[in-house]
Image 1: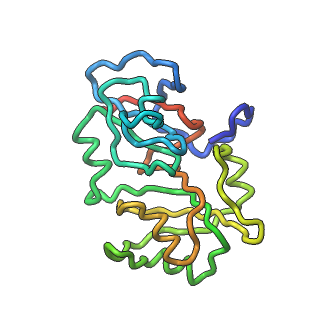
Image 2: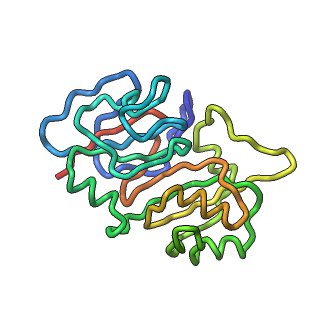
Length: 217
C-alpha cells in the first residue's frame, strides 16, 4: 500500500498474477466471458454494492467492469480489500464460512490492549450471536503501519488523552461487524479498520478506489 502522491515503492505484498489496473473514472478494457477476479481497495464510506440512495457512494463509482459482484462484504465504514467476480462458484467459495478463507485486518483501536485482551481475542470472544472462533492476533508498530497506509477522509475521532494501537487480526469466519464487536468486547473500540488480505489475495499498493483485474483459470 502507498499514500497518494507518494514515490515509495514499498508494497504490503505482491499479487499472484500480473494484471490490469484502473482508477475511479477510468474504464479498463471490458473482460470477455472468461471468469475474472477484481481486487478493489474499497474506500471509507462506500457501500459494498452497485446501487444506493441519492448521494451514496457505491462500487459503481469505482469499478467500471460489468457483470462482476462482491464475493463477501465489507462494511460501509471499513476500508481495504474487496474481491469481485463474475464466477458464481468462486464467489461462493470466497464468501461462504465453510471454506474458512482467512481474512486479515489491520485495526486501529482505542487504548493499548494488554496481554489479557489479546489472549481473549485469540481464544474467542462471546458475542450476542455466539462465541467467535480462534483468531491470530498481534500488536503492530503504529509508525510502520501509518507509513504504509493512506490518510482517511474524514480522519478518525481521537481523544488526545487516550492513545491508540494498531493490531493485526486474522479470522476465518464472517459474523456481522465481527472485528468491531470483538475489539469492543475486550474494551478497545475499533477506530479504523482496513482489510489487507483475503486468502492469497493481497491489497498490495492499491490506493482507495483503485482496482486490479486478474484472470481466473
